[in-house]
Length: 120
Length: 111
Image (cartoon, rainbow over all chains, first blue to last red):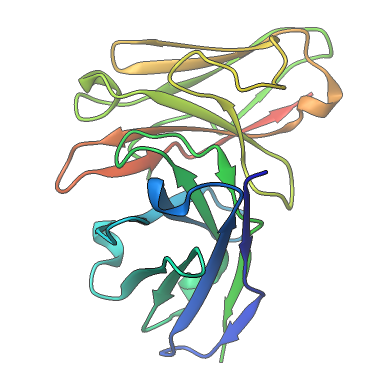
């Protein structure tokens, strides 16, 4: 069965960086695209960007350009999302989610979420 | 402020029917991009409810249905049950700039 298992909760200081992982299993990793979606406390869902697990091509939401990096390791079927220059507004639960297509796809499978807390 | 607009809240009594709207524009829903819907219970990841406008994944009751017309889409829930109380989000692709997935602001359903 398809599973996306994310790394554990993180607490970071303002200005620091965080790297969250998402390990995939139960399907051919390189066939799909992985997206990152975050949800601030009490707020809605916000799309951050995606990476093609096969070739590594990325597309980031304009809001995060310059401080987000998505990478993947095909040997371990793991995708990583690194966000730098953290500020308090980045406190949120971060989800990875899989689509088959590069655009206009639907998120059939989601990770369990990783809480990132940014606090001095 | 989301590109896709949803009502913040809707409510209905058990057994009733409710609809949740998702209004976009010519760069997303109006451009022909598909709309997908998710249900999110507190403290959990979103769950795919409707994909490609009006398709239900296996296991989703047929009480849930989706439609799309012009620059808008709707989620209808019939025969409301207490366990339907959750947040609902629409999602579509927007072709502005380099293109991106967009979510509606979410709708809290109270049963």
